[in-house]
Length: 64
Image (cartoon, rainbow, N blue to C red; front, side, top):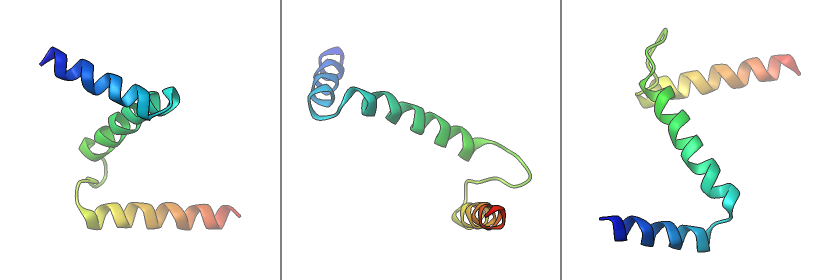
């Protein structure tokens, strides 16, 4: 298992830039936390995600 992890790490280091390797876990971590957070409504269903982002874009458009 250790050898597999090292091999995957080396392959990613060769294929992707260092900033990509740093940003990807951050995005995955934040995305996972957003989907698992219980707020006014949970974001773990497609309809709720669509509603959340449509409301977000409406607010952004109003700011312009």
